[in-house]
Image 1 (cartoon, rainbow, N blue to C red):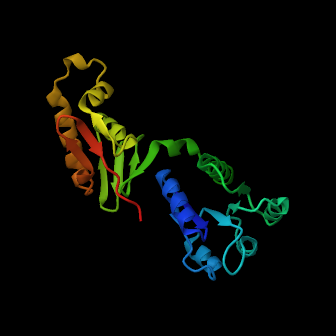
Image 2 (cartoon, rainbow, N blue to C red):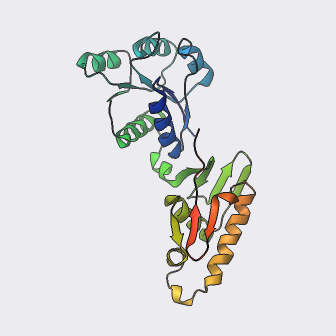
Image 3 (tube, rainbow, N blue to C red):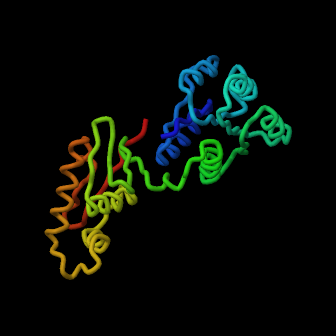
Length: 230
């Protein structure tokens, strides 16, 4: 995973950006002390820095100069100001991109991916095969779920079930819909077959303490809940 340092003093905005970027499988870190931004950057050694211009004590331009004097790490500026001089200054200081607030999150993701692809020659197409859920990373390509407790490998049917539930988390997915997703001709599939597959999935997830996040709604279907982010 790529480590991103988000230097943003608006706590509400920081939490929202972190939540969304984490869902795209990025490790996002913030700054604890805005007087020690460079020291925290040096300790973290992130792969990319996203920095607001207006910050406490010193502005983003100051910290960009500090970072650039020691590192070529890619930097993306955020700014709520609409002065063209801000964009010119950021580019002159060696920033890789500039985003005007307010912005669409899809634009931020696209710019992050473009910078990472350019700097690290990284194939960002792989990002879409990864998903985070309740603190775990799910690799749809490799059929693997892992968190700090370990790693499990799922069967094709199990990963399809989990994918359907997570993509519609906090909403009930009917048994009929899951069966249609799993088998081309559901007329020859017994209702018990889905139950067996789902029970096996839940048992494997228990190894990572994730089984409790898959709920059975009697007579309706199944529900994947999302653990609240902090």
